Length: 431
Image (cartoon, rainbow, N blue to C red; front, side, top):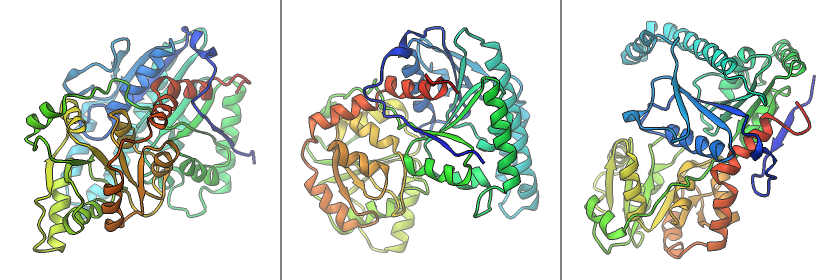
């Protein structure tokens, strides 16, 4: 069985040889760009800006377009899937409204998702073929709702595909199903043989993770797979608004110290640590908690801790648009990133705090904490420890290392991230 090919791309100090390849075309595929929550659209925009800065011709392919028809990037063409019937989306929405215990939902929804996935991948193949360029076409899928195994089987034999995944949720089950030992030997051998055929025909498939631990888990289960590590890019368009005006528009006190806990609540986060830190350990500043699911999370925590005063928390619940996000990051003094105790991966919110020049309190145990330490972006506290978070808030109330922050912005620029992906798709030494 072939050994794994793993590439860790350190994006700083990369040669600029790729920048002269203006004939190279990149097809960016983001199936969830229409969603207003999460980082799907922002990641698509940052990747598009990076490839454009390298001189590539960039085409973005989405399923349902973008929110409010906003552009991906001024120099990027936007296409929508034509083959995926909107009725499939309607069927999925109807199934989602059924109770989880409903047997019809349990049996039908996985089949509909697989059908939709195969249709998305099939159209992606045909769009990529229609974009033939002298240097070739690179297909970069960002959050395509499919198992990498589907793409491994369905990717064109002459295509260059990079599947970029930064979200750690359910990655192992996506890759290898429920088998604790991974795929069967027969399946692994068949996929490895198919990958050798793809390579012999000039094709390439690379699974790209946002942090090393995720990639190592892939290698353990799929030893035939080429992998790479490319960390999340920083938003180069982030602009800090006037603090007083931002607070006025958000209804916040003009001189009160403020911390920001930002982003939709998901299984990788530990919001209860933040609520307990502010309500029971009283850090020396007020908390602004913004994002989808924040109010529900606070209500659930208060229900378990009756009588607790939550007046130290200002809530901005729901999906946050770009303008409100800019005001929130401009109005607050520090950022808080709180994750579960088990290792967690990349954090797009951490890159946002660095882009807006805000010191960070980050829970330990994962890539986000490692970046905070390495670049001097703030303080690291023990995960799921409210008292440690409260202490970190006290000690981080100083400007982070300016040189470290600048190094972080350079190493994680949109251009360097795109350059790393180009080197994975078109390595100098061949496939």
